[in-house]
Amino acid sequence: MNIATTRGTTSRAMSLPNILTYGRIAAIPVVVGCIYAQSIMDYPLWLRWVAVAIFIGAAVTDYLDGYYARIWNQQSAFGRMLDPIADKLLVASCLLMLAADGIIHGWSLWAAIVILCREILVSGLREYLAALRVSVPVTKLAKWKTTVQLVAIGFLLAGPAGDEVVPMVSLIGLVLLWASAILTMYTGYDYFRSGIHHLIKEDEV
Image (tube, rainbow, N blue to C red; front, side, top):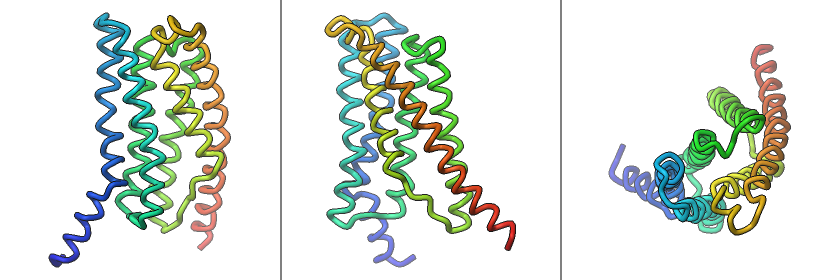
């Protein structure tokens, strides 16, 4: 690899869209740490608002990194790889912490399980299809699923702190979580069906 190629790769890795993605990953331990300190270590409820604020900031970068990558023509293979990973890490970490916190409990645990299983399924499918040089584009419904998912997690992170301000904040979060799980099943099936179609074609070759 020559110097010009190395500089180009470094420049793309440190572009603003990718820096926003790094920020989303860096936010994960802070959000989880705030909820852990409040719930497990019985620290003040205001820590949940800190977690919500940081989570909202991280969720906004999910839109901004793609937006700036498009308008500034800074799209890269590295960014396309890292962006969905950051999303999945953020969602999975928050769901696991909320389950440990007890905000997600009982039957609602099944909604979280569906969401996590779908993410693993789609990730594995994308990895296999990438080896076949087959692209699986993100559908508009999948983007709506992600939006509902993030809003649900935001409500659930507020949890008891939110309930003190506006009753039923936790309940609204759980309802949105189930809505997200339903969308997750549908979009997961859609991706799976598309993947199976390519797999059958590959076997026939």
